[in-house]
Amino acid sequence: MNGTVACPDDPRYIRDERMCLYPVSKDLKGELQLEESEAEECEERGCKTLKTLHVLKVTVRAHRPCDGREARMLNGTLVSRDLASAFVDADGRLRGFHAGQFRWQGTGLLAAGTLSGVTNAGTHRKPFDPACQECKAPGFLEGRLCGVIRRAPDRTFIGCNVIAIYKLQIAEPSAKGGSGPAQGIIEGAIVCPCG
Image (cartoon, rainbow, N blue to C red; front, side):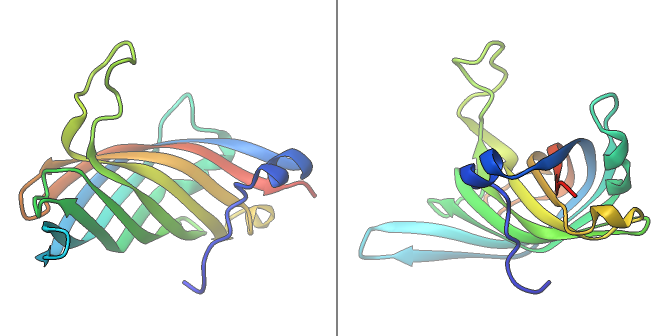
């Protein structure tokens, strides 16, 4: 991937530019593989942080009825080979954050970009009703994904963005950073300039 993906998430762009949106709703299933895990200490602040590097590889499938017809080209595989994380108190089961680059491939499709978010946090907690999590949720990664479509079966989608939220759950969270089977969702939109 060359350079940084510019996401159209500026309020002026949203207000002033003519655009078309297409709904994206995907189910994810695959694996999160731990490559590196190392604790570091900051004596000045009296803290320890765990740093990890993972490879994420998931199969992406349409979730009907919410997935739009145009988004079917996004069925395929999403891979991040540099998913880096940092965790509180050098424990991979505690709160942290993560970021990585991704490549999303399907039949005639290539999208690339970044994903970033918070790890091991329960975002479906009170005051939401129904509340199905506590504030601590080991094994969950949740955040924002932004990419650009570089190849597409329909060439009119080349250069369009994919903006979405994702939520992943890994089966085996651990103090070292966790790994194993992963499942989740992507919910968002393809954003294309008009014309």
